Length: 81
Image: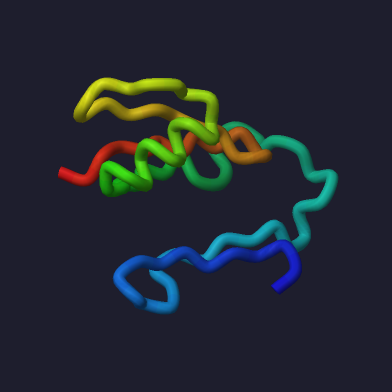
């Protein structure tokens, strides 16, 4: 779909759906509106790939890093326990 992604793992079609419908040009969310943040866990291989793609560089075992979506919502990525 245009401007939508569906994220899943283990062969499941999706666990999380995200989109930017009706948000073009909106900017950042006003204080107190929307999500406060999201935390996602990734296996070692996926974590390393995401960290490299995000410019987070080498991260120690068990570490996490935070990205921000276009609306400024923090997305914390950590290793799967």
